[in-house]
Image 1 (cartoon, rainbow, N blue to C red):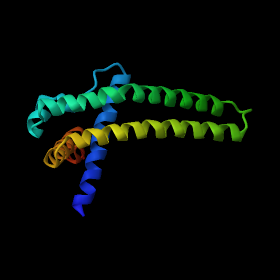
Image 2: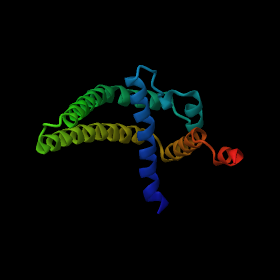
Image 3: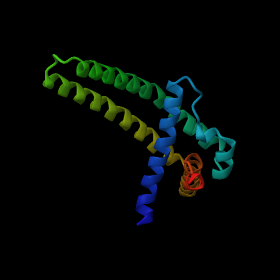
Length: 152
């Protein structure tokens, strides 16, 4: 069962990493391009060619992601305004919800396709190592249950 689910979880893990990078970029921060990190490059044994390919995929997708993110934000703002208007008809809110969800779906599709393309650049061993690195990073960011126990 692991061979079938492992690629899916890896793909989802990469999606989270790249989604965070886009959000950082949208907020004016420098996005974390995991494939350019010395730690990740060394751990995965990424070649310069692979890093360049990953960067190219990211750069080619970024304009569409930005456009989708802006559209989603605009549609959500419109929905918020409609909801605040007590004179609006329910059908109008329903239609706007559909627009919001279509924009969210478009953004998700763009992200997933980008991550899928990135995933294909890596070997099976590199994908597994990346999954392990990502799991460690996520564990490091979570508050430990021990710190909660110490407060009691």
